[in-house]
Picture: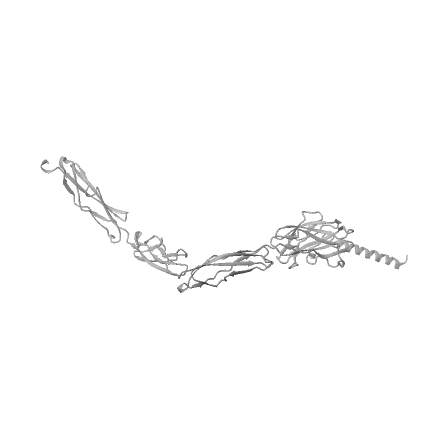
Length: 439
């Protein structure tokens, strides 16, 4: 055989071998991450004519997290299978990255492709599927696709399908899968209270903008407005309704209402301090703590405003040394007006016990038959080094004017107490004697 004929046969064989290798190489064991963006492999040329393959889905719209059945079909009866596939769902607004996730349930024929997700700066591990082998796969084939948790707007499924023998169609688009629009949710600011200007003509009122959220907020424009607007002038002294609306670019909206109340001209509050307080020092006159009841605060508008009271120093503070200390208390309303009052905390020397002096003993004669008699006396005297600043209480048992039975001597115990704590006692005698001349 001539050598040129041998060379010709060899070249034909080599071209056939290379062509066969090229067909086998494309998505032979599935697509790789290098094909994530273009859905093709370098060095291969896709068909330019119409594709027999197309993708449908059910249902025709989706909500966040909903499962959509995606089906690959053929429009030609003679095309009933395919060898390889790469499929993604991409948002219509920005088709650069896969969204959602496929559920192939450990299928022996399909696997996931790890594709970089540019929008989230992370990897999408189940947003792209491909074949696991190059065995023929018969149509129709259905995959489950789970919509993302947050709506991304309308979605298109792109598929590259390899039929066989180097015949494939690249990045075939489906119809758009429409996102179901849900109405936004608006939250109004808290109601507002302002005080009128002079002569109760009214005043301006301002507030923070209402908040507005929407399941599709990443892909739509939310417009909020209030009527009247923040900063408006509200006439007179009355309550006014403000209505706020949030509208998405699909035409759905939500409204909320809050109240702006204009009060009469603000008057300052009136504070009343507690009574002054006196405490005795701890040993060595180092001082002591002092407590008091809170001051009272009233305001003509107190039913509609917040009154805040405070004292400096606060109740329970330690007052050093032996001296008088001023405590200043303030009451403030939410219109910025305030009133103050002052009382005194006095720390006295270490307390000394009082000294009591009993009256002289008393003698009375019994009534007939020696039944006894009543006896009276002057109150005992009680003195204390700190008596100008403390309360001294004296008492006797029995009390003056009591009846003493029989003919005998009786002890009377008298006590002087300082502020209900430290005390001193003394005793004197009431004697009931027999009536003179035996009467």
